[in-house]
Length: 592
View 1 (spheres, rainbow, N blue to C red):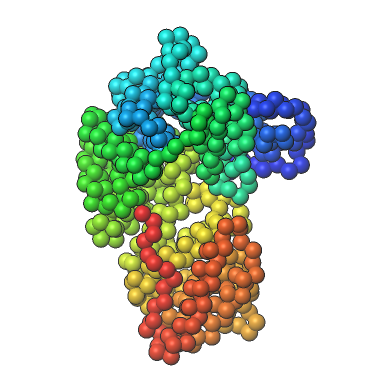
View 2 (view 1 turned 90 degrees about the vertical axis):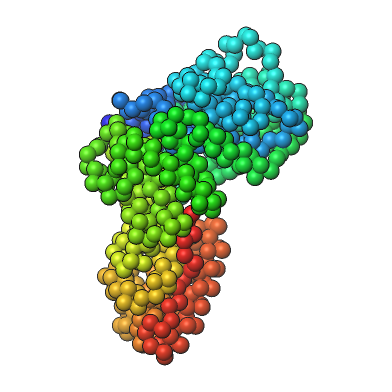
């Protein structure tokens, strides 16, 4: 069966209204659906309605399936989850930042999944108990050796009168038929001075224009019965008997805290250090080469690299390389061999027999490590190319549910591949990337960009980084070659800057960047500054008139400043001869 993708979301404006009842607040009305998509498991049509009373979003039909139904035949039930899909930090920090005032606070994690939060809590803070009815829980309890109960909370009379310092349910409430009753049930287990913590997708994030992959992940059609609005969630918690309730919006996610007294918080850095310490400890205790051990090592390498701790990331990556090669063979660590076997699989089973589910993400990290820690631009180029090509194959053949993180990295890997290629004299990746981004502005999100539409800030970054790579290389021949290669793409969008009245005003922020970028290239390579000045001036004038998406003001101001600086440099550069000044458009290597 063809997996669904973000392109299967259809935003509705004039669909026929029908009777509907909100499962969150029980409001009944005749409503028009907001969007339509397909069930993630069987591709049956599903519509979502926005409740005019509480603001929540709910599905029709309302049936809630088990995530096990997503898995392809022959794929272990927990492989993708423990290797990459399960966000250990994302699960831990909402409770890791709660200050209980106790030396060994207790935790009840309801819907604990594999049990990573239970395990982390027990290793760093205090006693913990998990509750999970799916097969993930049984597998996690066995592998991590943590206490997990395999039943519904209300069916456990032996702990009916127990209380815990923190009761936690992460990404659970959207799966239950009655959220108010669920919150009240959890409240019975919260100690008088304890805290109830919940996380759930944010209904307010579901709107056209937001990242479609994140929108689809939040909807999880067929598996999430509804998505709560922040105010609706706060009302549910207060109705459960708590005196205090606070709901934080973190993009596509809501984090809620309820208690009988104000909740105290710890520093995020303290929780982060506990998390990294846990990963290091687990990396040394889990059997090498197993999916759980590989997943722990991948996350440790990723988060050390994100923190700029490159030598530590390099050390752990060398260990993971040995384990992956022993388990899967050399193609799991060599980009060229991985690409050579790209046509040998076409489903999740074929993929997972050859590599871990974090493979494209890991190639991205290896590219960063080789570039920053080892100074190996040639190796980085190969890793970035293999990473984005493998991610695109995964999106096409097995679906976004297995590779959400990789899908969001596609354009970053393509950009870094283009920048590294420029430093070795290869311009084609930069031309292809710029062309793909330009096409995507006037079309649905494109698979070659990981199903992304580009925000103004991202378009700006592409030119910023490619310009910086050109400045690092300081090779006028490469700059001139890139300028020449872009001409066929420039002409239909901007016209011919050399022709009388031939230059068109840029129509959007991408075209403003394109005009400025070509202006800088020409200013560095052409002895006559006229075309460069016209392009830069047009980019400046148009960018002041064109409305960008909300939140892009800072990016536009930065663009204006850099373009004005480039314009001031053009005449001196032309007087001294081509290639004497390489302005650049930014600082290289932001994506760690």
